[in-house]
Length: 152
Image (cartoon, rainbow, N blue to C red; front, side, top):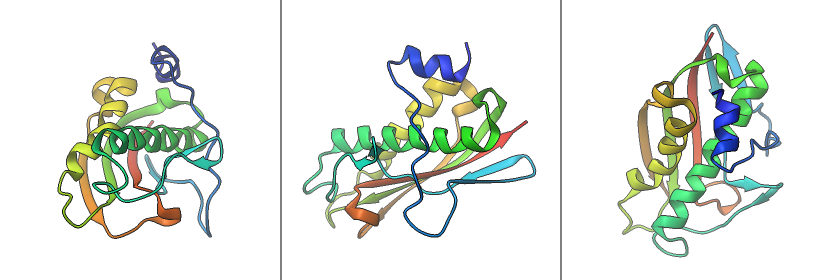
C-alpha cells in the first residue's frame, strides 16, 4: 500500500500545500534530504484553532492539531519529491507547542504528529524528535511542526 493510499485508508485527505505566510518556501531538497518549513494546523486555508495549550487548548485537541500539522508537512514533502513512496525515512521532527507557562506535556502533543507519520509510512515514519514549548507561534497557532526526510 502506498503512503497516499494509507492516508485515504485512515479517512484523511492529503491537503494542498499551505501557502507560505512570509518569505520562504514550503520545502527544500538538498541531496537526499528534504526540509519542510514549519507547518501550522491549517485546514482549507484557515487555522483550525488558536490559543495556548494548557489554557485555551486542551491536550487532546493539541494532539489532533499536531496531526494536522504533520499531514500538512507530508503535503509539502510530496510537493518537493512528487510521490511519498520516495520517502526512505523521516529523520527528524520538531514540534513547537505554544504553551501556558504551567503546561509541561509538549511530548504528548508532539505524539499526534509522530503517530500519524508512523501510521502513514510504517517504520520509515519513525524518527528522532524534539518537542519544544514556546511563548507564541505565528497567527496564534497552538502547534507548529517541521520535519526532515531522507528521500530516494
